[in-house]
Each structure stands twice: as C-alpha cells, then as structure tokens.
Length: 129
Image (cartoon, rainbow, N blue to C red; front, side, top):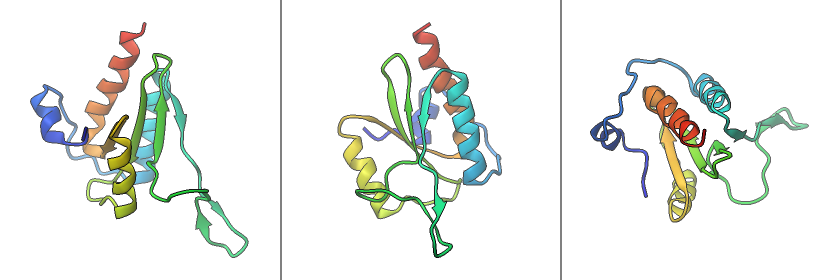
C-alpha cells in the first residue's frame, strides 16, 4: 500500500501545512520530537566519520533503508523516509519502500506534510489512551 500521496490525504480530509522551508535534517528533528511527544519509540541510525574523514552511515545489509522506524506501544510500527520538498527517492530507497509496503506501514514524508504527520501521530496515540 503506497501511503505517500498527498492527494489521497487531502481527499481523506487531512490538512497540510504549505510553504515550510526546512532542510531534511531539521525536518527529521521535528518529526522525531513530535513522535516522542506522542509516545512513539524512534530509531534512526546516525552517520559517523571514518578514519579517512568521510561521513557515512555504517550498515550491514542493503542500502536505502528508510530514515526512521517509529513504534508505538499500541503495536503500530511505521517506516518513514524523510525527504525535502524537492528530494527524490533513490532506486535503493524505492526497493526498500516497495518491499516493506507488502506488509508494513511505509510513508514518504515531506515538510509540506507536517500538519498531517502531527495529526496522524497524535491520533494513533489517542486511540490507545
């Protein structure tokens, strides 16, 4: 199930916050803070600098894994790829997204989706209170 289409969100009655100019790093911090505020556990691997002075996220396995894994005590688990408003999904990211969508909730979120993201994260939390 593709869950990254703003049009379908708008049709479902969700509102969007337009015109936000934030980079992907700041956007990520905002999403992580919102998730934690609503009781979600958050996983995000951090890059580190290697001996040659090159920044990299070290991983064993296939590259392109989504930026965030969010888990709520209710049992809901979300994989979220975060992109700037103009950011593009790489072929490796697309492979992960397509595969995960076969059995998991996967989103591609952009700063323009912040209002919707806040509402979604809080509503899952409210349903378990």
